[in-house]
Length: 170
Image (tube, rainbow, N blue to C red):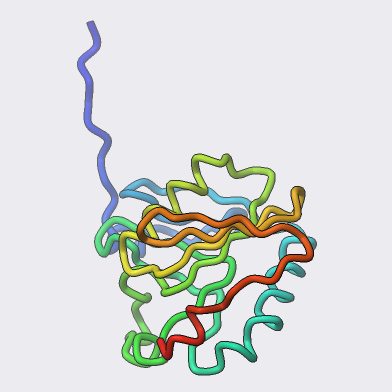
């Protein structure tokens, strides 16, 4: 019988020393190097539109496609759109990445991600500093907003989304 072997976890320091690959985009998830797909133009245009729509409401927050360290030693991920408090943005060292999750993480659901992958990322972000996780489903034309307490609200095309996160002075 084959003996079970624990996977070897890659630390952030080890990940940063890996050779840069131009052919793929890689992230560090739970200590494992994973290849993620590059966004299509539709995806990129939606990201850009989200930033333009939300920027006037969130001028006091940093706006970026930000790379963050949800789990300090074993995780390095990107967000399609993220909002980070000015204080956290300004105090993150230039040669590091944001520690913990941005206050708001917005993901555009690409066809390549499964629902469970998106739910896993939302749970991770909401348990490491995130205040809201948004999942945009362009196919269904919905936005699902999840809060740290697990409460989720789905908005459909034409419905207004409450932006309380930006009104609270965070």
